[in-house]
Length: 477
Image 1: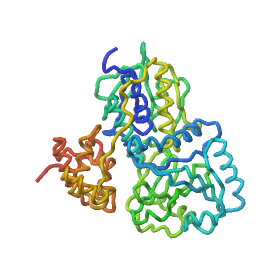
Image 2: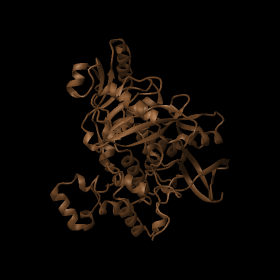
Image 3: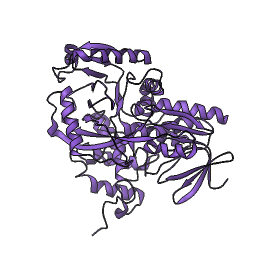
Image 4: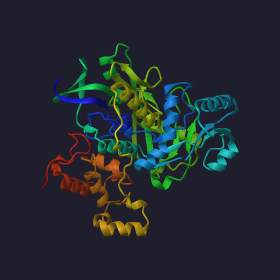
């Protein structure tokens, strides 16, 4: 074998790849994660509904159902161990007519069969007692108290950092172009870099997972990018609802949701449009109008004038409408077709695949596995006394750079210096929310660029928004 050599190579640095990496780091295996972007959480995992689904929607007996329910169960303890934001705010699936009650009852029965705890159907009046802004047309709802909201950036980055602290190597700007079966494993061709040889491959490549699967496996799969547009509202609108508000599922998924975010904003979306372009993360006026129009069916008086940004994400919809998780060829493991509820399911997928690989490899668990990780302190969440104590120890925590989100220089510095530290403006944004507020980085970008350049030695004209080619300036005057 030539080139870099590993026991396991994971393709894809989204939430699923990071979860697999974290679980594999429990074992005595030389593991690598390769990601074509400059950071983890740069694809589907950064642009989604940030929902931890309860698990009532997936078909009984499906891999989706099993992974969803188990991933939901794991999320609370995982958030404590790895210090990321998560809250069980509960969810409501709204029914708007008596004719649709059989579908609501069927959803309840499916959830019970899937093992979702504490489900119940409540009346329209009970819904409005919980959520006063739900419309008068609602006649009933399925209430799932175990539903939750999470920071998708925080979850993915926490998993990746913990994996790295436990020995997993992360290789960014590393694009796999071909996979060949060789004696004892696989050889991965990498664009512009030396090849990687590995005993086992984990395919967690999102909308590109079919490309890698079809290079290796006889049974071909097809993943269709399913685009969803979202509107994000200012934190002033964040308390308009407390629960995650769904509509009864239809042909293309769970419909338009209205939900608070873990950071206090209000989120509306997603639409569902199947496209061919695996990079098609554009928004359209028509889809954003659809999101706002349909959200008003569920929730009244949404302050749409407080929209601060819109965005879109791509769901990796496999034509069988099922997760493909497991060993698809000798030593080649798929985590393909991981669309909704993929974020909720990722922790369980990570455990499942890591156990399969460790058993086949005959790998023992480490005695020195680090099970916990501490996140970056956020001054906006601290009491006056806590903030004063931190500033006394670290004066840079007393200098606010991002006014909208109250992000200090100390937080930005820590986002750069820590394990798998940020090397782009988007990397900082995902770690500490600099630039995510009302002005959308209009005020704080120049100072953040100066800090990033100072801490990394990257010249100002080479500072990128994300990928190389997204440099912010052409030079200094």
